[in-house]
Image 1: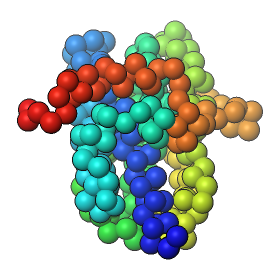
Image 2: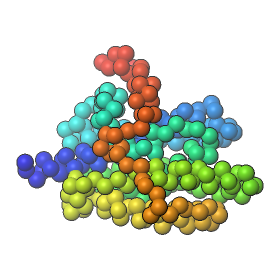
Image 3: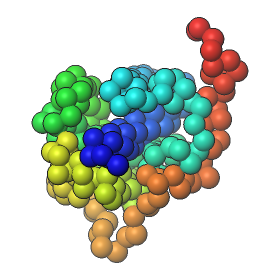
Length: 258
């Protein structure tokens, strides 16, 4: 196997992880449409859902055009569950608003750090995409930061719910940085991106400062087993029903022009 083929496979792995995360998170965000706790949040989550699905589509296009991948629509909707590389965090049902908000906060700060690093990637399609998405992701984290701060200061019950949401989401969010093995090592060596460990360290520093300012206690990573397996195709019971719902219309006739 030549080095170029190895690099293509490693890039395909990385971009599929990122795209699948964005697609499933976007679908979960879209489920708040018409159900937001206030109209402002209904609109905000709908807008972020559209952004996330757009991010996924852009990555699927790079997979198709630069890495000999499948048609983006077919790749997004027609794979088997085991072929998805999303982390367990995005698969979880929305539950109450506090859980969805905390997931949004942890996920989007991870996305911001990841795309910041990709502005300097040696894989040519990634820097322009990272620069293009920077503004959208900035809006997402500003939204998350504002609501985390506001709800943590809205009384004892509100604060307790946010701390509980953090405790529940944190081990799931650690799965965003699951070790990519040899594929990751190759991409780090080729300066495609810094690697999951480096990104996680930046993420931990960033979220610690924001959460501390809001009065929340970040769980001790050393005492919490991370929710891993999604990158290898091992998913929660929640993903398959989501995939069936998400792709139902497309699967009626994948060749149709909508």
